[in-house]
Image (tube, rainbow, N blue to C red):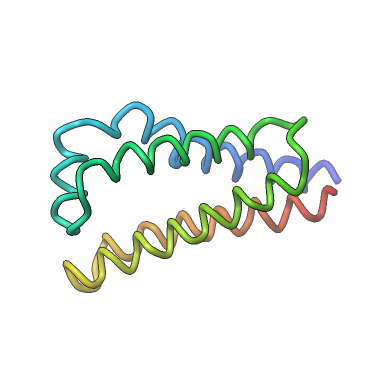
Length: 119
């Protein structure tokens, strides 16, 4: 049980950092704007992504959040990460822009798996 909790909190903390803290701090930087525009999305899409990523990350990290809401956050992150990998692959071809989101998806899957082991 202790090992499961440790794996859950490490993986969930990584998701919190990559999908919550990083977008909140860098979401409106010039590099982020150029990246979104390069993929063909409008600039206002950044604000939508940042708001939902921060809310989803908080949902996953806060222990008192209901399990059903956490399920929605996991689903939202899954769709977002798959869309990021697909967008990068379509625009730039297979490369780091495809692989990195899939690594994050693996971490998210580990968090989700451990979440269900603990509940």
